[in-house]
Amino acid sequence: MSLDDLRNKILNIADTTIKHSRDLNIPSTEVFVLEQSTTNLTDNKGKVDSRDGLVQGIGIRVAVGKKLGFASCTGFDEETIKSTLKQAHSIANVSPENPMFNGFVAETKMSKEGILDPDIPHLDADDLIEKCNIMNQEVDLSDRRIISGSFGANIAYQGFAIATTEGCLASSLQTTFGANSYFVVTDAGDRKTAQDFVAARKVESVEGIAPKALNKAISSLGSKAFGGSEVLPTIWEPRESAPFLAFAFFNVFSGSAYVEKSNPWKEKLNEKVAVKELTVIDDGQKPDTEACQSIDAEGTPKQTTAIIEDGVLKTFLFNKMYGDAAGFSTTGNAQRGGIFGGTPYENIPVVGPNQMMIKEVAKNLEEQISEIDKGILITGTPIGLFTANPVTGDFSVTCNDTFLIEKGEKVHPLKSISIAGNYFETLNNIRFIGNDTEQSGWPIDAPSMTFLNHTISD
Image (cartoon, rainbow, N blue to C red; front, side, top):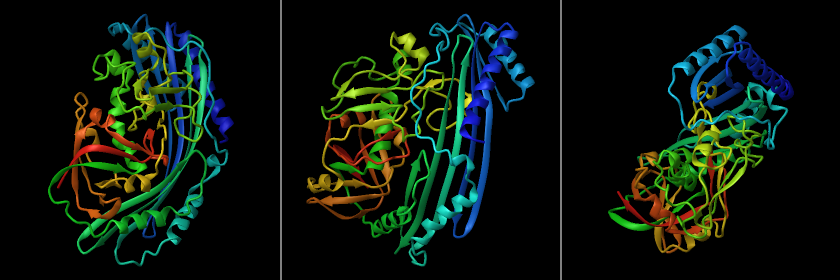
């Protein structure tokens, strides 16, 4: 199937479902149609596992005044769709009114699509095996320190369409390619892991991924205990600073939490919340990211939104309903399924980030390290990032991949340590924001960053 064929298919299903809704005399309906095709392949010591997947389904919201009903179905069978419409209508009739609801999207307006690779729908497992072989051939797996090494590649293409009885009919397509190498190594009782990956909207080169991951794992061997407790700066590699900031940002940027008065920054709009050097943008229009789509999950055009500008909180993120309730416009941040997955057509729209970006400032990772008399370099994602207190911002995480920094140089890797602090204080204790952003695999990309006043202990 070509991408054009996919778009025509899902638009036709969405439009036909709206016609069925009118035939059933349903007052107001929103239809979300999804089709997704995936191929995933892993090669672990020559054992190849290939899996194909196809997801098709429809999520339907019905409004009777301010009363809402939702139902979903798998597949595109016409009679099943009609039954799902009736079910959603029945649920709406007996539901309490939602005072925040002010109608579905009523116009067909679209922003730009992200990069689309027309070749991806025509690739198969053999093409992914070739990518895995390239990664495998770049490393010497005979090194006795290597316990395991695995290689993976995946492709996917999908499209979703939105239609409403109010007049919206729009769609968005996406193609993705990913590849990764993962190693487990050991020496003298010390065990370390590391990975590297590429994730893109089109097929990319995989050269260099495996050597980088293996070298990172081996260089972390020979770790020593930190030995005590101390308040120190922490320096975070780009792919680690992103998830570290994710928890705080997901919570305090939420427009739904703002409306429901559970957002700890609900009174801080247009106030200073971080150092002046920090600017955070939510970008739904950066073409090479998965988040770049012509519409969000309820039919609003995606956009680029400055959330924090020069340390000042400028806005929250909203979908249509919460934007209407707050007296703000939607920022094009409706999602289905949430940031950690979930089948989109089985879920109603919620507020979530597109792709948050930290504006680069200066000093790459090595330059930041050279400025630190004593500190900790974080080279792996800590455990427990999402156990922080969402109200106070207090956090305590465990990190197994760190190095001790002394007099501007990496001294040696460390055994497992804990890092504790407060997210809100941390944003006002940023010493450096780097200029070396990397793709993180999270809905936030960031450069390397240095934070002051974190408590480090064994």
